[in-house]
Image 1 (cartoon, helix red, strand yellow):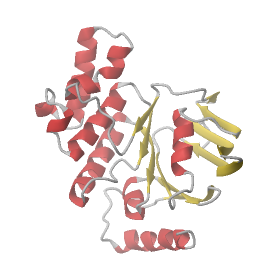
Image 2 (cartoon, one colour):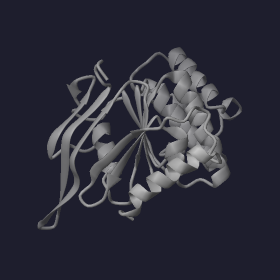
Image 3 (cartoon, one colour):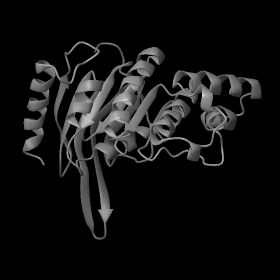
Image 4 (cartoon, helix red, strand yellow):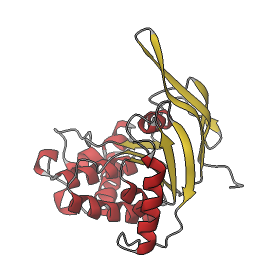
Length: 252
């Protein structure tokens, strides 16, 4: 990557105080992400995947090392980096359209612009008919689509996803994976996606970054060379799945 990466993690270590002890959650992690890349972080529980994501989001600061976006230090949360969690985090008292338009509205954009932005992204995630519904009237998969649309409406260049489909049933999960790839391609997003599921990582990503536990280290960073759309039943897909499973096997 010769051009400036959109995100750069340089020798980042994160320690947490736990009583009198210091726990190292992440050790000397380095990663370069180019604009438009879809990167999956995989690894066992407690390997620092979510910690790394939260530092890129600006919710946590590094103990050592630096995190840069477009070459400038990440000093805190910003609308250019949107986070999508497993539990959706929607405002229950707002409709779908109001949830999606919340960021632009909070930044004082004109009403007509907020409405047009909300409509664009509600349409993009296929929820046009549900624009006036409230979160409790939606399925889990639909709520997760609202969460994704809300991040996009906020002008996020980077979407950070922490096991966003982990709580969904298998069929909903597969459908949302396909929809996420469509939105990613259409909106030219950069995605950093944390998952436990090797199959999900292979299906979605351009590159898979493998982390080891305690303290979390990046042990591999590999391109996924399979053409899209990917077929999880193909021999090539399964060969990759076995290889990543073997990599993680020593760490489970």
